[in-house]
Amino acid sequence: MELNLEEQLAALNRAEGRELQTRYVELFGERAPTHHRVWLVKRVAWRLQALAEGDLSDRAKRRAVELANDADLRLSPPKAEKPRPATLAPLPSPHDSRLPMPGAVITRKYKGTTLEVKVLADGFQYEGRLYKSLTAVAKAITGTHANGFHFFRLGKEQSR
Image 1: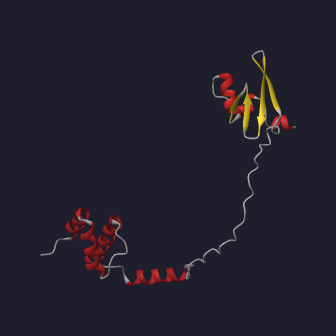
Image 2 (image 1 turned 90 degrees about the vertical axis):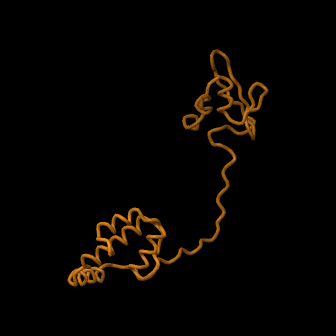
Image 3 (image 1 turned 30 degrees about the vertical axis):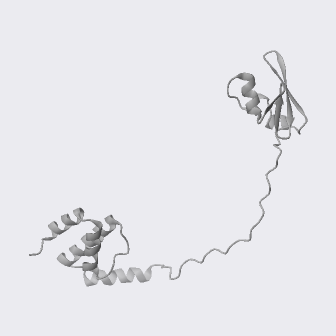
């Protein structure tokens, strides 16, 4: 005795992946192109309904073919991009344009004292200690995080 359509559809929601694969083969006569459970449930349910209640009418099928013929379908896959010749990327400038050249001294008045920071090729020197960034120097001076360029007033305004 065959189950009615509603019972078959309810059983699909409880079915495991292998059961859905087997059911797909029974209904379509070929292996499913995917293992995606939700897709399999929808396709098998559609096929069960089409078999039980009838497929599209001949008129609807003809119209679908007409629409497909009118559509701009791609008949060949897109061409693969040609490999571009390797180009050497410009090396980043080792010197930040906001900073003076190595050897220069940046000065700033802060809380009544004049601060002096020497610019080195690979960092900064303040009171005999080496720092990797101006921000590290500013933090050592203020005790809080501060942007080094802003603290020492370097940047766009100074370059004018």
